Image (cartoon, rainbow, N blue to C red; front, top):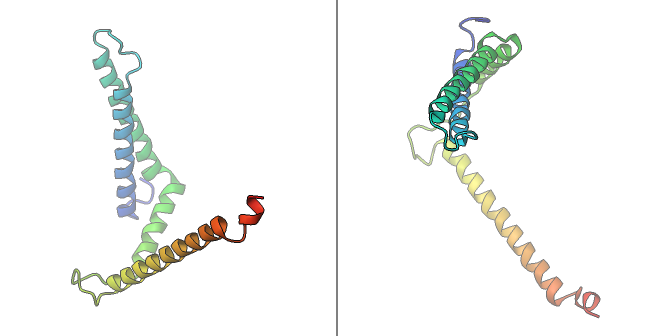
Length: 140
């Protein structure tokens, strides 16, 4: 393993995502079954190929995450940078005084204001195009 013990949370997380992608690819391939039209035993062949596909993709992700120096260095650096982040306080849960809830309120208010702005702009432009300035230009 390249630089053993460093960046393990990021490496394990990337490996779990890789295994999930491999499982999805294998299951999708198994359900596709292009050559299983009425031949006996084709389902068992498909299941074996899907298993080999799963193992092959998982092995590729293991090599990519644990053995390849450039991706290992990236995940190690990412893990180090995430340890430096000052995360917003969320405990006690659902307390409006926490920093996370204050930020949530700001995002909700900004989204509502932006939605109202777009809605009003749409109404004004709809009125102008239908009844206003462009009426004489469009329908002569």
